[in-house]
Image (tube, rainbow, N blue to C red):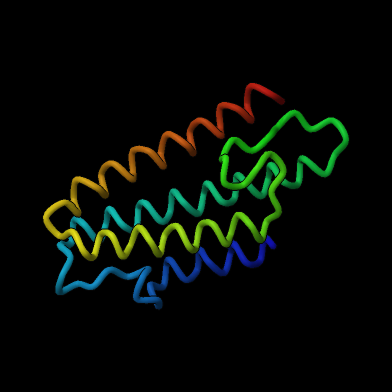
Length: 127
């Protein structure tokens, strides 16, 4: 499953998918950078979820998933599916709301950044 995550990160870097590479004619350069930043944070969150799932294979792992859509013990495929579907929906919403795009992207980056940071603190505190 780590290979899937690495492949996803490579796709992000290459920008070969339309969803991953915002339409340059419609999105400002700043919005494109915010989108790529959000996707990077989302990939980090996915990696952190994979670390948690691997930990949960051990008998005394103290980490549980807090996302109510995934449940306390998700599978890697469920995490990837949720990320893909969620990011597709977010992308479509951003496409439909050009006047609110920058504000929404800033908010998305902030929230995703807090999630990634919280995951890191939790790992640090529990181990």
